[in-house]
Image (cartoon, rainbow, N blue to C red; front, side, top):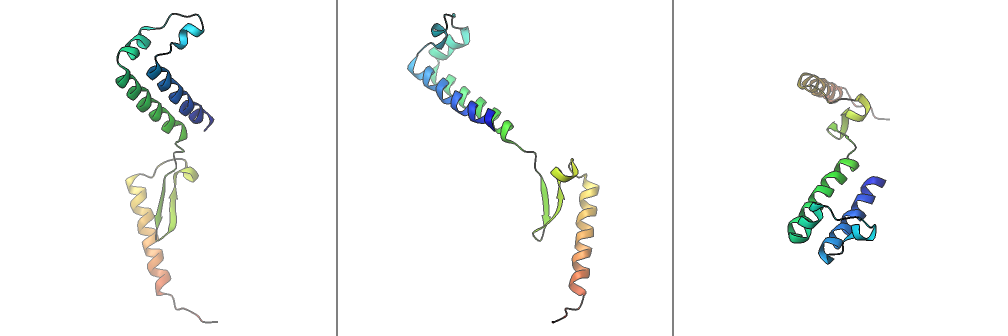
Length: 113
């Protein structure tokens, strides 16, 4: 999350520098690379590219890989618990077992206390 937060701030600073035209490399006594020159000549495209590429990287950093399957609000599969996604055969078997269990539970008599 910290990397994604840093990227978000860095993205905004970089877009601001592109729009204003301030060369950050001169501050460090370095020659600006050719991509910076291209960005100054094509500010709209450069800002869009920075925005979309950084968002893609931020989303990768924030992704947990969580994947869950629920049936009637009851979790029946969790990628975080199992460590992998179910195969189609596993998925059909899980859902079939849950459906049979639900039918069995509904057919049981209800006791009143």
